[in-house]
Length: 278
Image (cartoon, rainbow, N blue to C red; front, top):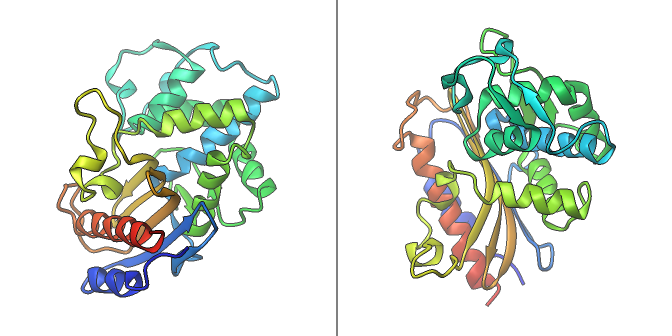
């Protein structure tokens, strides 16, 4: 099986005129066939780096260094701006480690992320990626915007590989991987992958689960829009990573030029996957 031959042309056509750089990696999880566009380009992760943090957190839990349900008090020093809800709560809030992890992924909570970086350790995150052979995937700092430099770096191939290892239950442990997948399933900000998918395929109507399930993590910074995920369909499953950087549109808006482009790429990949595997 293979992605339909027209996919390369469709992606090029969609990206014509885009002001930034687009990099793409998709792998058919049935047979390993891939679609690639500059898939080894190393770029800013934005909040996609929260998946490596989640992996390193689960390594710490499995090693007994902390408990998944341990109750902790959030350090006020970890307050920061951007996405999430903890910044809107009063100082002294107490949450379980599992709650912080869930908030970090499903609403991309930056305070929860900073708290977990403190508890896991930046170097532990990077060592976890190095052990998996991911040389570009690194956490560079906590989410404080006055600290210069990238938040994190990765490539589409590497972050898709990490997602695939979770899907195959080969990342940390079957228990950890199933829990991580369930959290990724609930991410709220997945429109880069889902906005243009056929509504009947992703709708949760009539008490039936969607035909197409997307477990992913997105990320946004100035000039950067990314999303990486696992797409499960009636025709088989695939992983996909879409990364953009250098775009000139500064708006945090649904019609940011990258947020118009990436859903078109995601839709084309789904259609090419479906047609190529028929």
